[in-house]
View 1: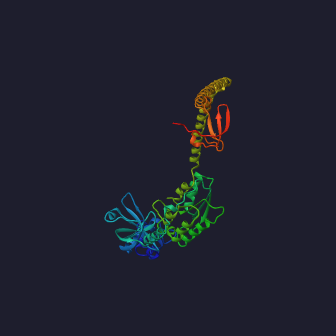
View 2: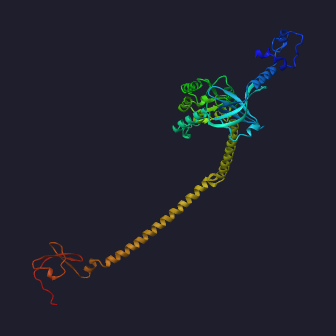
Length: 439
């Protein structure tokens, strides 16, 4: 730079400044050139224009290869992106006219080959590649690593939905593994204070990008699980950034630490378009740290509104029930059993007397009927009674020894002892002679 300011092109480039008098010496001319002393400093615009001119004059068009990230398609039709490798990155732009010539759709993680020129964007003082051509080469190394690890962990079931745990309805203690200096924790706390200020938040500091970030995040998650009394919810996250900035949340050590957590984990990494393996393994994914606070904390205003609404409904239900009970009670009071209980008792006593009288008559009728039937049966039995037969002059001869009835002379024998039953007594006799009938 210094050589350029004191070179032959200095006076020509800063044409708006005073030119040295032709009579002045070369030393005087050098002393009056812009940027050569504190009396003639360069403006920022002059310095930026000088850098831009130097790049235009000294760096020709070139080919560049790398992986695409941070793709933004503006409404103007221009496409802004970052081209990177494992160690460095550079911004690039495809003007609308060049983008319309591309025959493919640019995606995050895609490996590309581009041709363009280096340019300086004055308003921000940054350099970028203005691409004139862009060709796809496949997936970039980061995207390949992402897919390989995703397939491995998915095969182990770490992303299965049945592993997801619900968040407690009213958590009290929240842990947040993040950078204390980042915007993520400030956005999170701001939403939390607005929705449910009673919650306490414990920030567990950790690097969220760069070398060693993944290990610190994993250690923070493990530490959170050892805190007593235990936390209700653990948030792991950071603000948005490029895929390189968020790469720590794609590391296996972080994913396994989240999967092993005994505390429900909310992943709040980056913005809506960013998806990390940490998002996939967590119990709940929030698109931003602010949304994580909204997912965790109930709205105090909504809860109060719900309680007030429930109170009104409960009051209305109780009042309606009381009116119904009052109406039923009034109806019961007006019933005769309440107004004149003695009348109801008299009626019941009268009914009891009537039933007793009817029962007595029924019993008497039943006895009379049974007596009539008994007498009838007795008369029939009396008619066929053997005693009646005996009373008419008949008798009944029986063997005195065994009591068997002698109805024929063939059953008797001389000398046999007999008992003869008459209507009014019993005769004992001895057979002396048997005279069979002459018939």
